[in-house]
Image (cartoon, rainbow, N blue to C red; front, top):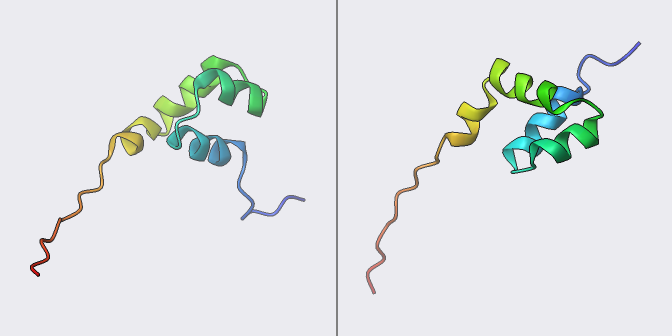
Length: 63
């Protein structure tokens, strides 16, 4: 029996995708087709997460 809390291939692939790994490399690493990777990205909305930008406020420091 597998532990429910262990990340599965989709979770691991998502992290790699968000860090910038290419489709071909993801497919080879997780032993699935490139179309499967594209399907996961679309189905689970990974591209929306990748496109989110973190806005940071720059504060000016006066001497």
